[in-house]
Length: 268
Image 1 (cartoon, rainbow, N blue to C red):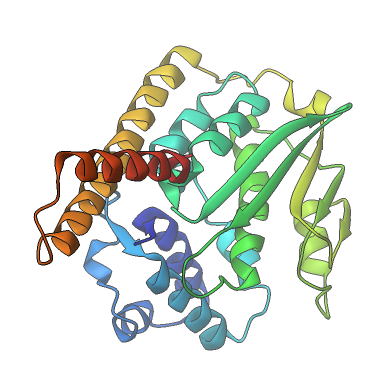
Image 2: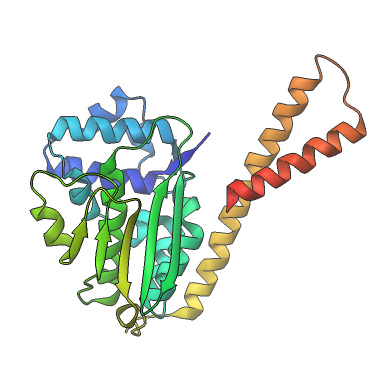
């Protein structure tokens, strides 16, 4: 089952509070326990998170709600990954950490960060098993990343270009206010193109020694997630086989090998 961290959900809830919406009632209506919001290790199912997004946009009537949520993104929104980003020596290192470990924040996240000439390109996608996330989710990830980078660097950050898969909204002024650059809608990717010189500037309050320690914590959390999913899949396979026959050692080994390959691909 795909899941997302409660800290990510908390940013949505805070934007609902700003809009005057009864967030507890909304959460309970879709089966999400509001009491778990402050447990930063708790994970809600991706289906619940998608349901919350749909309900939040409907309750606020705000098609730019994702940009409102982005203004509540803090290092804690991304759990230990966010704190490692905040301690990074440059925004480039912060982006690399975000891309490498985003799956800890959401199992559905697929982030890529790479150099493109004199620029760096960050692309974002969400691969879900069930319903597809609404476009406001992508708005939050892209805008939230830019705003968090500005918070980390204590300086403005103006991208070279931003692209969205979704169409141009009736009023794109809120988008222009956040990104302050060329925005293209209806494109093949959701992305932000940064000037390399902007991301390679040193961050004044950086602490790479601490960031490396936080990287190790991130790796442990990811390993734990991978291990628990793998063990659960093994039990499911054996449970399905046992009623029909006792699996041989060869069958067990084959299934374990297939599961391990699939789990490693899923983890990265």
